[in-house]
Length: 315
Image (tube, rainbow, N blue to C red; front, side, top):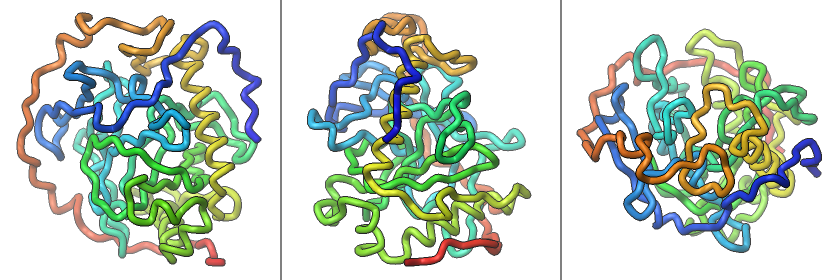
C-alpha cells in the first residue's frame, strides 16, 4: 500500500465532490494543429480549470474517475493540459517552435487509445517513487482509455481503473493508468488488468512496444518500463492514483512549491489560489472562436520504422 504520511493536509478542506461529465463544456479558441489552439473548460457556463476544478472522482462511491481526454485515439497531435497557462487550457505542445506531433511508429497510427489525464492529480517532481526510484514528471497522471469509442479533445469521461504501467520516460516516473470508459460495452466484464488480455489480446504488448519506442524517431533513448514490463493490477493502480491526488492537494494548498505551475481555481475550498468568476484571470479569456483544423505538415504524419530491444513477453 502507498503511504501518505509524508503529507500534512489538515489545514485545508478540499472540494472533491463528484460531478457528472455532462456538467462540463468546452470553449475552443483557434484551430487544431496550430500554436493558437486552446480548449478551455466551463461548468454551468463559467470558465474553470480542468486541472484543479474538475473532481478526480466521477461518482459518490468513488469507484469511477473523471478522465480528461487530450488526444483521441488514432491521432498524434500532442495536446495536453497546460500547467503554465492560467486556468490550464488544453494546448498543443511545442517542439522547435512548431506544434508537436507524436511520431507514427509503425504499425501504430498515432495513439492506440484515448489519451488524457486525471484531474486533481500531480506527479510531484520532488517525490522519488519507491517502485521506480525516480522522481515524478511534474504533470497530472496520464491515462490510457482502451474502450471502442474515439473520443474528442476535451471530453470528460467517467472511467474504471484496470491497472497501471510504470513507464520510465527519460529517467522520470511517468505512470500510465489503464482504464475503460464506464459506458463501453465491455466495461461490466473488465474489472482488473488480467481482463485486458482476456478481452483485448495483444493490446498490452502493443502498448509496451509503443511506449518503449515512440521517442526513438526524435533521437531520444528507448524508454524502459518498470516491473520487467508487466502492467500492475487495479489495486496497485488505485494506490498510485490516490498518491498523486495527495501530491496535488499539497500543490493546491501551497505546501509544495508550485514554481511555474498555474494554480488559480474557482472551487477548491480554503486554497490560497482560489479566485472568483469576476477575477481578471477569468474575464480576460477570449470568447469562443472555433476554427476548422489546420492541415498537418506531411513531415509530421509520416511513418517511422524502429525496433524494440527488450519487448515484454506475453503471458
